[in-house]
Image (cartoon, rainbow, N blue to C red; front, side, top):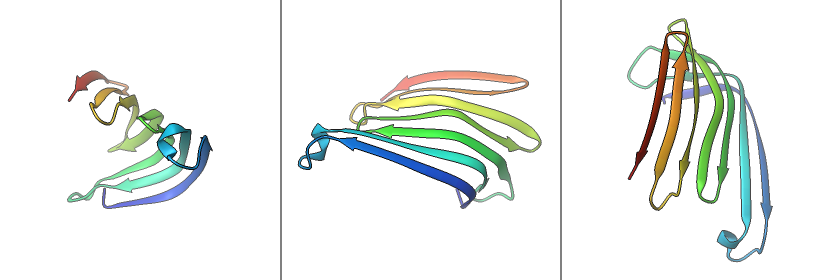
Length: 105
């Protein structure tokens, strides 16, 4: 991405020992609302981006991420599990598209 503008909020929760942090439970959620993403090397912008991105110590997930590109609204849901041996499962959909994929390292 070249530039991201708009509104976001962040909620972070950690429960556990101060050291080492990896033994605790970390939960972070980013809520995007009416954001815009300018794509690098193009003049295109994904507009009206909203949804949430959640992270923990070993998982990254995205839920209800919606955005409009060239007058088409897309929705993205999915997750990446196990940063050491990554597995990704995601769905991209629009009015005329439904794409599901799952892959591992």
